[in-house]
Image (tube, rainbow over all chains, first blue to last red; front, side, top):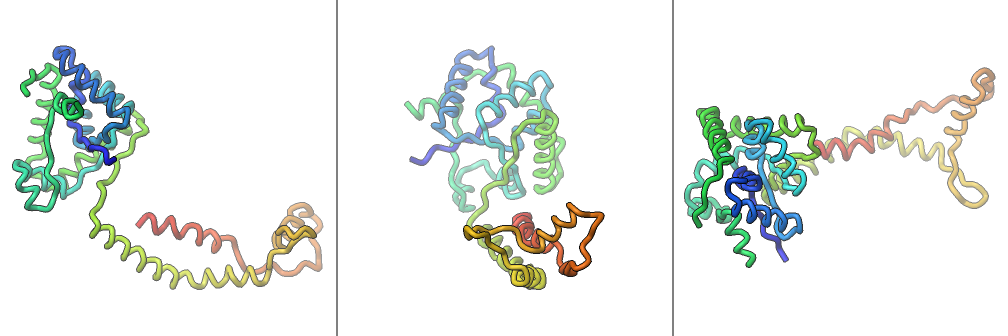
Length: 115
Length: 151
């Protein structure tokens, strides 16, 4: 069966350590557990790494260890992606340009997806 | 679904805004290059065993690349034709010799070399002249796929 591919934004990684939002933290950790059990294929891009690189050192280490521990595949970005990101406000543009439509979910919704 | 934005998110939002301001006015290529460079730098800084992967290319890109590689192979074969010829010639001149069990053993040329190594002070006078060949052409063949892969 084809696995669902997930692109994780920096904010999703942040939820993993969000002590002030215990509910979201639990659900995000559950999502990562499922990623580890290979229910999904999870990707990040160099944008996530760039954002982490601008964060405080105190925050960098735990976020990077998360990427390493859960084998999140980091992808380079290129001109085409940059151009697409600029236009990507409406999914109709994806259709027009011949790309697949994307769906944006919070970790809670991804977990619901499985249930 | 509504959810509270955790405190930890605030820093990331500031960073996103800061990066947006920094990259204002840059072209898409420059933006992508900067992002990838920063990503490479942080991976190097923490010596992580993670590598950034290139985006999977579309079918058209793959085909274009394949055509380029095939034409490169032809050019290389044409240029390196002389090398191939000398390797084949070397094999014909020094065919592999077999022992009584039919197993392949070292050829004469290698035997000669070994004898020279073990008796450097007493070189034999009746030695046949060393064939005018080096090991480089043989390595070239192994390096060829690597070179093509680099393209």
